[in-house]
Length: 77
Image: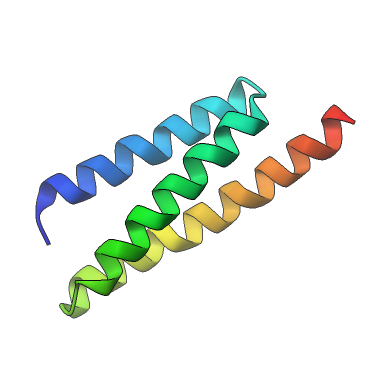
């Protein structure tokens, strides 16, 4: 996989983290969906084991961020 895909994923994940820190759950959720879709697309076109291992780390991180957003939504109510 190209290094620029990793850089884009890293930057997008940082964006989600920043939105969570700003307590903007709605926008964080929207970005999470976009990034998850992009990650799924990359996974669909990847067959290298090293890439798949690296991408699985992003899947785990996105799942953790999703849990943080859910918790953030609970605090807002």
